[in-house]
Amino acid sequence: MGLEQSHAFQTVAFCETDPFCQKVLMKNWPGVRIYDDVRKLTGQSLKSDGISVDAICGGFPCQDISTAGKRIGIGGSRSGLWSEFSRLIGEIRPKYVFVENVADLLIRGLDVVLSDLAALGYDAEWHCIPASYIGAPHRRDRIWIIAYPSCIGLEGYRVENEGASAKKFLIGGGLAERAAASRDSNGWPHEPYICRVAYGVPNRSHRLRMLGNSIVPAIPKIIGESLRKLDQKNIE
Image (cartoon, rainbow, N blue to C red):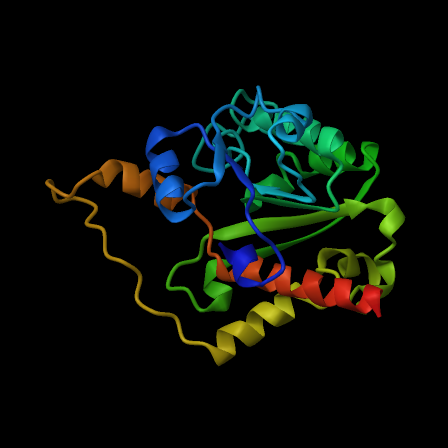
């Protein structure tokens, strides 16, 4: 949703295994193909279905990475699905890759993600942006990783910062700075209220689980806008 709001991307397919989540996607993106098992999805199957992909975005499971879990790390049975994400990147060879996860990935798997991306010939930049940084009434700290083929050569568009910290800012403009500008210029509307304890709310547990797995669209919107401006500069 956030990337579409940046007017730089269009959703052509989903991969979602949860039946309730599939219903929500079908309602909001009617006609868009939904694949139900990332382990079975391949670049060839997308091509056979007439689906052309030049960007992949997603958040692989965080249960083995999050502080709230057992902290097994990216090698756990659930967070280990990153390997399928990585496989698809290698098969599809997209221009851009967007990866989202909890901030604990910094200490429980970021090295694996970056190593796998590098092995595929992708450079990457990352930054932790909490939802509260753009004015949301909750923290929800998440890491955002943007990867692109090394041959694109986007280094010249990085924000000028000292030392290694420069690599933690989004190409085409500082992600943190742009998030701050969004926070300062726009208010934050009240979120839909879903009672967490009362019984009788339809699909209450499903909705709460979806909220727990969700992200704030305003952040990928900022990312998409930055990439759109970068592409325009390259065309010029």
